[in-house]
Image 1 (tube, rainbow, N blue to C red):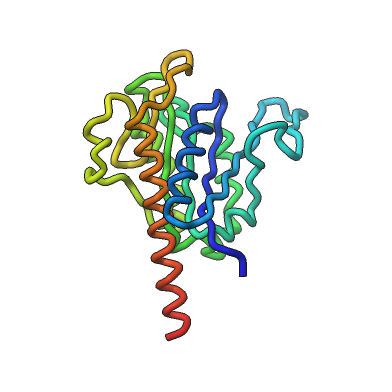
Image 2: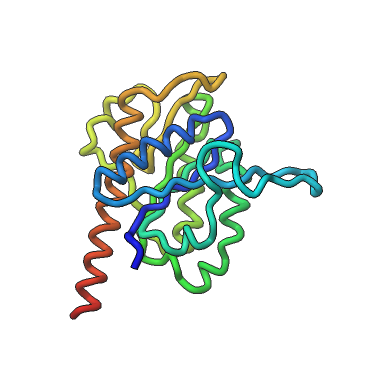
Amino acid sequence: MNAPYVLVLYYSRHGSTAEMARLIAEGVEQSGLEARVRTVPSVSPDNQASQPLVPESGAAYCTEEDLRQCAGLILGSPTRFGNMAAPLKYFLDGTSSLWMTGALSGKPAAVFTSTASLHGGQESTLLSMQIPLMHHGMLLVGLPYTESALTETRGGGTPYGASHHAGADGSRRLDQHESALCRALGKRVGHFATLLQTGAAHGARG
């Protein structure tokens, strides 16, 4: 049997969401679980365009099997008009076979985002990403106010998930509070994934 892992799945165009994914993966591994970081290819209005089978750099593309076998899922996207980016939505739209079999049902899930402006739709983007996860029957994990960075932050950070204010040109790096909340989110999902795995194992033996 393969060791359990949390899938950190994201789309990033300018690198901020990818950096958040890296920090979230650190948090997952602080919980004792493996973090498997994956991305999705871009989409194009040109129906003749195609992406390479393997990205030239960064995380590998996610497969259906990566998603099927995960013990938990953390989903990230930059904001596009208050919603998730098209490549991530396109990928999720292709997961109906997992929905039909309930492959993700009962697993913990969380979301994260990065925006160019401070009030650029962070919370609506996070909420929009939660909707397909709920349809899959996943258990949503947020950030509680016991995380002091949530009240101290002057950048990103919401109870619905980790967020980052990247600035109009995308050059603003994650600050200490945003970074702490990314790690905290990863650690929480890893913690709950472990509890659920342990409970399932005890139930199987009982």
